[in-house]
Image (cartoon, rainbow, N blue to C red; front, side, top):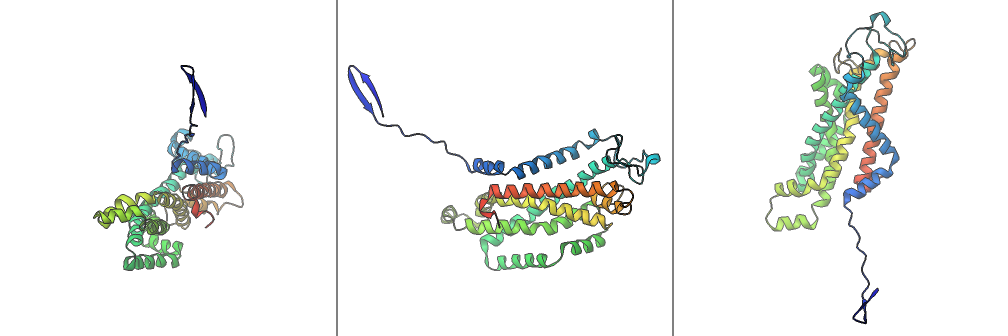
Length: 303
């Protein structure tokens, strides 16, 4: 309440209601994410790994396949060779850095294809239900009971392996989680008033799914994309370890781990560094995905 004098008369004005700035859901999601210190650190490390893979030629002294150090083969880590030299005279730090390109690119590309497969299937199953939902759930159950590594091993053996084959195989087993997340979100939103209003105005189911349900499912889509990345990376490393992944001389962490096991008792760096690189990358990607999930959809926390 305030008072003022005008022409000798005192006027009393009513108390002013404080104005509160309305915050968007994105603001609260960012606040939840920044409060998760583990996810923040994991995101920073993941960003650093991605940056290193992009500028790999600028931070390495040679490319990944040059045998420039044959006279120093199997040399231990030193000031000249931070991660040592492998059995074919190649700088091991260069191999690790360039190997990140293979693992990260397969992870991101396969996750992208997983999203492209999982979104339409999850949206159709969640919106229409009935026989469509039954069919999609039976397919998901089929993929759930088949061990991914054994199925991937069989498919990679039939296709001969290679980069594109691994991307296809990883996407084939990575869409399930995305589909389940989108299906659950669509089943919730299909009963909302704005969907009923769109139906009353004559909107077709395809229009409702495309313009209303999928945009409102962006949070589980992002979550499914991020969580599919480490699964694809582990699958690539497993297949490369078994010798049917990315063919040499292209550097791959799984392939380098397989080679390093033959030397691990005498030349420990051959197995240690690619294993550590893979473990750290998968760990930080998983932690970042978990933090993103808790930030975008806190109702999923703890499930």
